[in-house]
Length: 112
Ligand code: DGP
Image 1 (cartoon, rainbow, N blue to C red):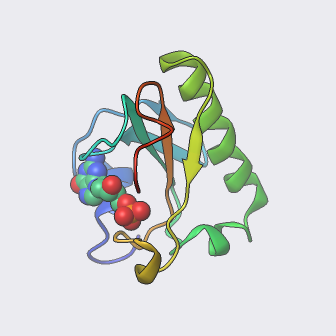
Image 2: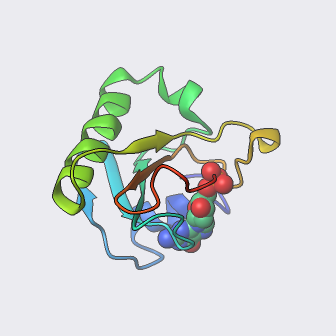
Image 3: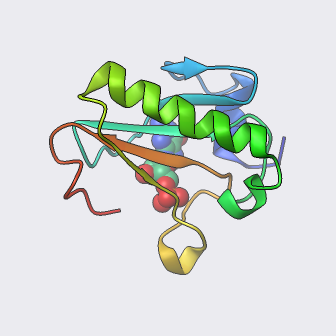
């Protein structure tokens, strides 16, 4: 767990959120500022800063992708965008890797 990382605090349960999905590698919860009808963050349990670092753990990266697909199928029609803002200049504001799952109404236009 990294000091002062909001997603580590969610993963550990210190910050209570409703988990929409959880397995040994990842947890998922609604984005606090939704940009589409379905806007869920899928987050690795282990602290890594971005998706490039997460790629060193292929099982966790695969779990994240599969969780996104399952959530989009469960909560929309199965179509989804999976967005990884990587680096502050590209809009990343939380430096614990996370995929934005955007599905349902507004998913194709939700700017991130
Ligand atoms: P990004 O800008 O790609 O790093 O996305 C970070 C997202 O995380 C942003 O859409 C807002 C969301 N977020 C930040 N803090 C919290 C939080 O405490 N709870 C939840 N549910 N979402 C958060």
